[in-house]
Image 1 (cartoon, helix red, strand yellow):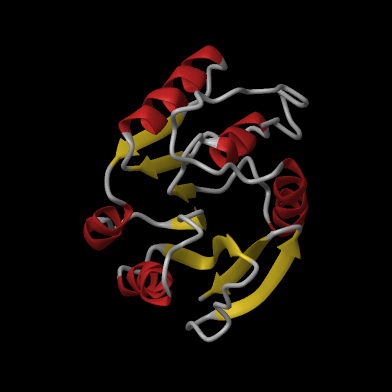
Image 2 (tube, rainbow, N blue to C red):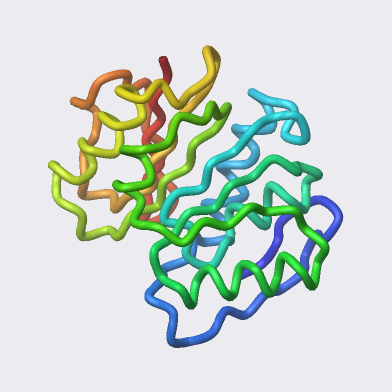
Length: 178
């Protein structure tokens, strides 16, 4: 995986092989950040990265100057890797080792961008639960955006507050707004 832009532009990062992850492709990530860069001042927003895995998305935000990132993953190896890179590159990503659903159920922070990259084999109920908990606990700021990455075969357009979907190769980003 590669950091696309910012302080560590073009920096390659190699995650351990034993992590249960599927990092967002560089092409999809670059396209996503082109969209976000047009919507927000990336250095000024508060970001929540759910199912953070290798930290790929969090690292991209950090490289672009954001210092308000929380990364949540239940796998201790993923959290360890994010913390290792966090220290090496002097990022300021707050990591939380937790089940995402338990975290969302109890959490009451406010975010401008919530990015969720759950396993592609999630069922409709699991995807729905992500959006349900975000809305129920009022986790998005007024102009905030929830983005869920998923396989192109998955359609989330029926979920509340869906605004659009963008396809990049085999992955999709579904966008939700208040």
